[in-house]
Every structure is written in C-alpha cells, then in structure tokens.
Image (cartoon, rainbow, N blue to C red; front, top):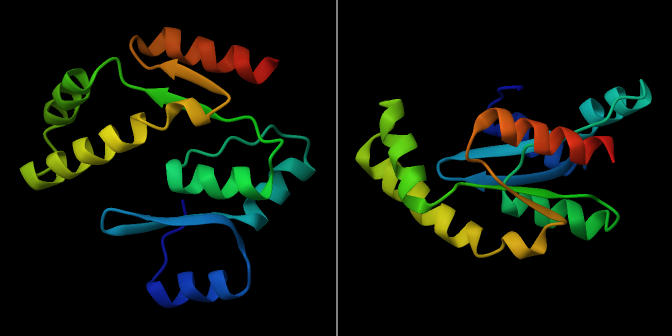
Length: 132
C-alpha cells in the first residue's frame, strides 16, 4: 500500500499512472502501473485485490484478464465477521453490507467465483486457480 494525499492521487490519474482506481466508501484506491510492471518484469504472477469497480476497469482494458470473485458464504456470515472484528462503526457495517449485496449480484461477471467459507480451503482453491 502507498498512502498519499488527494493531490498526489489526482496527479497519478492525470499521468495515467493507474491500471484502475475507484472510490470505495470514503477512501480512494488505485493500482499503480509501476508496481505491477516491476513485479511482472521479474516474472512474478500479479494478483490485484480490488473491488468490482476496479475489476470492471481492468476487464474493459484487458479482456484476457482472469478474475476471481471472493464471495462470503452468506450475508449473515459476512455481517457476523464484520461485527466480530470490533473495528467498524454501525454506519460502516451497514454501508459495507449494502455494498456487498450489490457486488454479489455481479459475481457472474467473473471468470471464477470462490466462496470464502473456510480460510485454508479458500486459499487452496485460489492457489489452484493461479497454478492453472
């Protein structure tokens, strides 16, 4: 992660320095081209952990992209997990659950959908997709 102020973020947008960028809640996120190119240049597999806005942008620009939607077992389980963290306000939890509902409706747009139920099993499934 690179933390920056709005001015720096806007400058990178103007310079076409992001593969994708989006606003999620109160914060903006982006994938720096320089980070991806540096890792890919070393022969690394590059995984982007991005929301549906970012995934839309990547798939539009790079239709050959393999995408994986990580889905909670249920909205009830997602709510339990969010509350269990003890780090989010009620307003934040409600906002995140609303966003999750909308995002889950779009899971079919992805190459693969993996239900994030048991962490070790989820990691194994994603790892196997990467190996393909």
